[in-house]
Length: 288
Image (cartoon, rainbow, N blue to C red; front, side, top):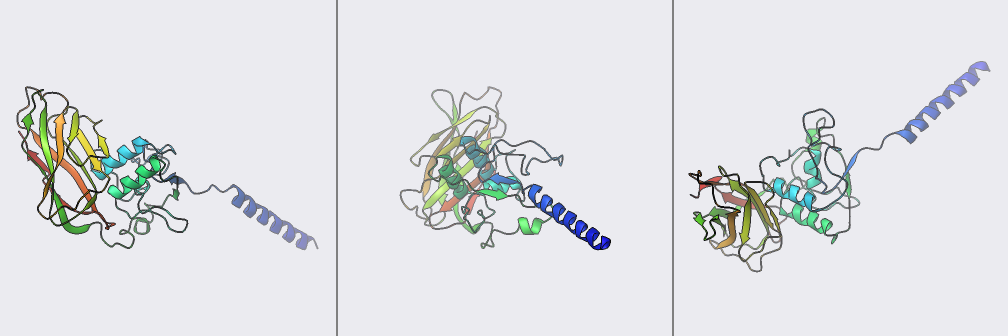
């Protein structure tokens, strides 16, 4: 009788411990899709700042868009690791549904468009994602793009070219930037990051016909721009379009000798294609 009572008591204690554990277990950490600003805090001491809890402020605003733009256009210091929570937070396209985690493990203009819609509340949804165990399960978390099998549509559809620089009447130095099509194409989005190699002064962008949606000039010596509305007309193979001019906000210093314009990244999307298309560009071009 005593043994039976003790056995029953132990069973009740075990049940209490299990129930208490389930009641007080911490839910897995999550992050708001698109929320990548601010970042830079190493909360877990692993010498990185890409993990859940080390970025974001649980709000979506223009600063999230700017940080995403810098990552898409590969501005130095803002390229995030492919296999990380912050990359997944930036990867907002395709959008999350009730049954499918969003993203395709690619950062391009479609992610900028998706996040822009949420920042402006055109899309009021605010999905959250559970952090993946990137370090212990890299294959499961960091495999190839879902269903695509390719990181990019490998057909080269465009090229970015820059012309020689010139000094304006006001003394600023400016360089024209062209987008040339390699086949018939209607662009749904385009973004580019560039800067002067040996001249670290503020830059600005003077657009031509196709008006950019986002322009980031906050970093001295660097500039990123994104065109997130489709072109009005299809470009034919070999057609060149003047995007605009990269211009210094002040005259070049008298000590400036050769001036090189560096392109860090260029990403193009076309209407009807969910993958970015290939873009050719020279990494550095002497413009003076």
